[in-house]
Length: 178
Ligand code: ATP
Ligand code: MG
Image 1 (cartoon, helix red, strand yellow):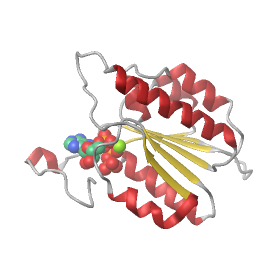
Image 2 (cartoon, rainbow, N blue to C red):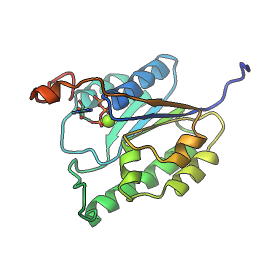
Image 3 (cartoon, rainbow, N blue to C red):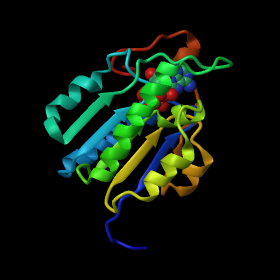
């Protein structure tokens, strides 16, 4: 056991609900400790989530940005070049933010999806995480976290779905899903 302060890598993955919202809970905890948090949302962009408005209350201490356009085709089809471009743009901003020393915590929301869809190289992400300034915490969310990143992370949580309202035909609810 050591009590020295250091930056951690956290991953919230798995099929159950709660990956993104757990990252936001951690962000809230960090901001309450006077830390600065940047959350970049890969792929997201079409829905207006409540948190986009809520974080405004924290001003420059908690910045949340949607970096995608919200709808990405999955399955057999090749990824749309426009989505790949947006992912690469989000990644460029992410790596700059991680290295800048300006943020105590950087959250890469849904980055695991972007990697698992082949839109972003896991080895490149690992390299940037490995070379980051010592005190920066990074949280990666999304299903199917890449084994390379799971291996290097300090804390990995897999959300397990016990049940989800959607299975009963209950559609996304305000305040719960968005
Ligand atoms: P949240 O943003 O609520 O923390 P999440 O990040 O764990 O969820 P994602 O995989 O990013 O989940 O999916 C986003 C949306 O899909 C959420 O609105 C969530 O309620 C919904 N969702 C998550 N898991 C399931 C599931 N197992 N079945 C149906 N819908 C789901
Ligand atoms: Mg999510």
